[in-house]
Length: 307
Figure 1: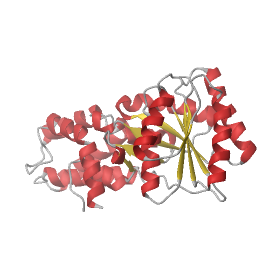
Figure 2: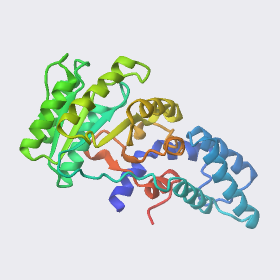
Figure 3: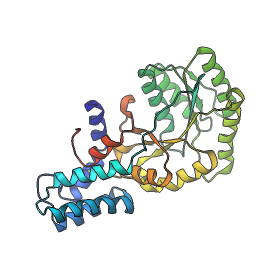
Figure 4: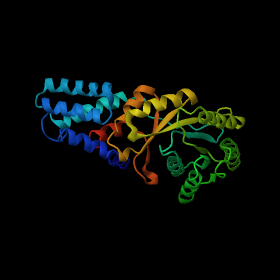
């Protein structure tokens, strides 16, 4: 528990630092006052928490301040974390395995969101959790994508099905399901090509991959997760909406949170789409992909310790 919380705190350190800088360390030991409340409002907007969540946090802190003018910053941080945790209720994705397997997880998103790296990290996490995993390189458009996933697979000792650049991605997925099934693999992770959500031909390729997988298993893919670059903040909401409309997403993975001060965007994405968040990318190492935990996230963002 504490090890996982440390991951969250380290991964969200840029967001925490930005809030502390804007508020001049309001969540330390000093008392709350009118100017620090204004600073906090600015900090929450800058961290991309959005209007609704920012107003809810401020209202509860102001109500507590009216009751107790001696309210300390640390107490205000606790109030903020409690509001976030309440807003995020129900947001934690719980991975359900398909019976019989393999459970097919398709990772989807735009170029640069970190899908290929996330595929490998997810395979590593599931393997360490005792699952048998196979990767499939269906990003056959980007020249380096197949080699990148192969390199990760070698590094992490994960089996992979891949073809050459330019191959039919749906055919690769079809072959990979057969291979995973014959080897008794429990999880098949499909790394798809990055695509603009506005390009209908590329969206059609996703639909083709799904149709081909359903020749093996009518329920596949069992999970379709959008990999979202956390540094885009709430700008990613529109992107996610279109993918959801066209492909029917079942969840999200938010990456690159260690490199941004806009870690509040997770809240806006959840409020808008109500898609469960399964994992967060909190760093570059294989074990820096972590299951999303709303309490850990809320406490880490406000600079609090695990309780």
